[in-house]
Amino acid sequence: MPEFIAKVGTSDGTVMERSFTADSEEALRTDLEGKDYLVFKVRKKGGVTGLLPGFGGGRNVKMKEFLLFNQELAALIKAGLPIIASLEILTERRKNQAFKKALMDVRDKVRGGASLSEAFQEQGEMFPAIYSATLASGERSGEIANVLLRYIAYQKTILSLKRKVTTALIYPAILFVLMMVLIAILIVWVVPQFTEFYKDFGADLPLLTRALISLSSFVTQKAILMVALVALGAVMGRAWMRTPAGRLAIDRFMVRVPVVGGVFHRFAISRFTRTLGTLIAGGIPAVTALLMSAKAVGNLEFEAKLIDVERKVREGSSLWESLEATGLFNDIAIEMTRVGESTGSLHDMLANVSDFYDEEIEARINTIMVFIEPVMLVVMGGFVVLIMLAIYLPLLRSYAQSTY
Image (cartoon, rainbow, N blue to C red; front, side, top):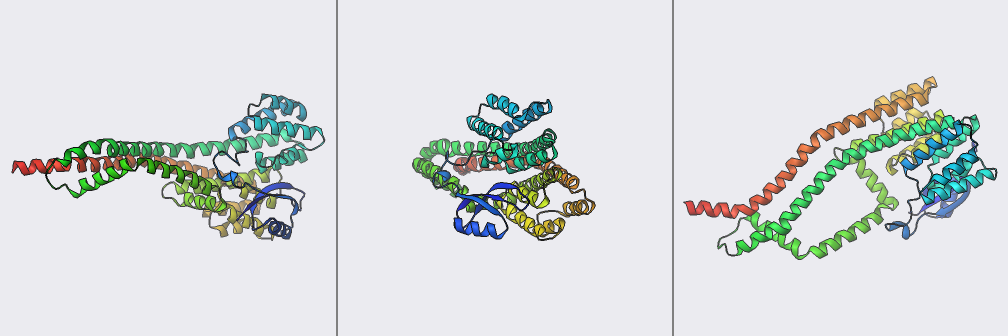
C-alpha cells in the first residue's frame, strides 16, 4: 500500500505533518476528513529511489547533533538573547549542511513573523513532531527555555536507553561474526587440504567427513555465485524493509525474537510513555499528545494499536482502559496510569512508568550479558569441534584398525 505525507490540522489548532498508508491520495483525504482533520497538503512518499541504498529518507538530524543544538539554544535563550540572534549564531556553527540549510530556513521564517514552533514544523520530517509541539507549549506559556530543558532531559534519557540496548547487542554480534569467519576459514582453506589427502586414503570415509567435504567443495566452487546472491539478497532485503509491509514484518519479529525481544518491547513502551508524559507536562492536549507519542514509538505494530488508543480516548474512553485493551502494557503500568489519571498527576505517573520499564530493560540486558558469552562460546566451540572431528575421524579410525 502506498505511503503518503499529509499536513493536517486538528480541532485544537495544532498543525502537524505525518506519514499515512492508503490506497490513493483521494482515499487518504476522505479518511482524514472523516476523522475531523483539516487537510492542507498530501504528497506521495518515496518512490523507486526510496527503496535503494543511499536514496530517499535520511533527512532526520542525528539525535546527538540535535541534542547539542538544543542545549546551546536553551543556554542562549536563558542568557537573554533574542531567538533570531540565537538562531543566527547556532546556524553558523553547524557542519551538517542539510541541518544548516534547515536552520537558515527556520531563521528566515521567524524573521518573517512565524513562530519558532511553526518554523520548525514547516521543515517536515527533518525534525521530530514532538519538538514542534514542545516549542508551541513553551510559546504559549512564555517559558521556551524551560520547555527546551525538559525536552533535552527527555532526549538524553531516550539516547541513554538506546545506547544500552545497542551495547547489549554489539558483543553477541561480534562473537557471531567471529564464529562465522572461523568456520569459513576451516571450510574454505583447511578442509580442501585434507580432501586431497583423502583421495589416496583407500578406505570408506565416515558420513560426517563426506558431508563436510561435499559442503567444502560446493562453497569453494560456487563462491562467486554465493557472494553475488548474498549481495543481491542484501539489496532486495533492504528494499523490502523500506516498504510498509517489510517494516511491519521486521517490527513484529524484533519484539518476538527469543531473549532480546523483551528488550525491544519494553524499549518501545518506555519511549511511548516518556514521550506522552513529556508532552502532557508541557501542556499539550492528551489526544494530540497520544497521536504524537504513538508515532514516536518506533514500532509499526505498536503504533497501530496506540493510534487506536487515541481514537478511543477521543471518543470518551479512559486512558488506562484503552491502554489495557492493547495488551502491550503490564499490570503495574496500567495501575499507575489509572492512579495518575484519577488524581490529576498523569505526567508524573507516566514518568514513573517509563522509569520502571527502563529498570526492567537494564536488568534484562544485564541478564543477557551474563549468559550470552558462555552460550556463544559453547556454540562456537561445538561447531569447531564438529568440523575438526569430521577432519580427523578417518585418521583415528585408520589408526584404530591398524592397531588391531
